[in-house]
Amino acid sequence: MDPLSRYEPLLDDPAAFRAACERPLPSVVRVNRIKATPERVRRAFDERDVGYEAVEWHDGLFRLDDDVSPGNTWPYVHGWVYGQEEVSAVPALAVAPEPGERVYDACAAPGSKTTQLAALMEDRGLLVGNDNNLGRLSALRANAERCGVTNLVVTRQDGRNFSLKPFGGERFDRALADVPCSCEGTVRKNPDALEDWSLEHIGAIADTQRAILDRAISITREGGTVVYSTCTFAPEENEAIVQHALEEHDCRLVEFDLELEHLPGLAEWNGDTYSESMRRAKRIYPHHNDTGGFFCAKLEVGA
Image 1: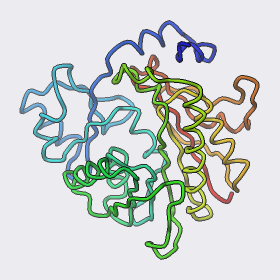
Image 2: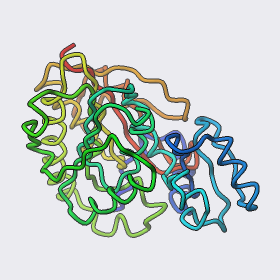
Image 3: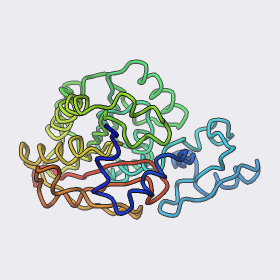
Image 4: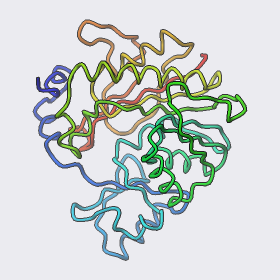
């Protein structure tokens, strides 16, 4: 079975979607505002003849020319920028943390969204970056250090049963559950992403996704925010997981602004129906913005 063909009925232009998925993904960096400003990064790139263009929908993102490797640039080495896929910047913006808050990142490593959260928090408050993969946690620590993040506590726990005991039992103001997934939306940067694809795998990973989101909601205070995101198109890993949360928890889907072109979440898929509020979620397809694929939903707890 061709995994991507199952989504063609959802698309405005299946041929353009296919063509986009077969093109290499543009290289993008995010300005790390803990250490730099977009203007400072522009000057650094200009002084060193690094080819780039600004991303229209977000003033802190730059697309680099095809012959530029982000890790070889001077601003990257000094932590002024972070190499981050364009759509990967969406979840932290949806979380929208405030300086001084308590924020939980359930699946934090290697750190693109965690360091972005820290910058949005102005490196103040408490940011907990959790992951259960020791090797990836090493990358998270290194990236946080390079970016000058000081408000981060790194933990190694299973996100399905994360404990608040080390944090005095106090719930978080906001949480991000950017969960492991089938990675269909990453095919542009990883052409082998779909080699081992199967419905059985999607079903198995969905159990983990539900549990991670369940726990994130449980440890977020009443009135707090939980953002759920994946880099896959599969409704079984997206709308179905959020629907489970709506049925099992006192929470609701809320809108969030996103200037990047997107489609609403689905209210129906293969005979399954979801809450009409699911249309407040965002589906991002590669052919609309020349990006990867993504899904993002924002929940308010105890509303």
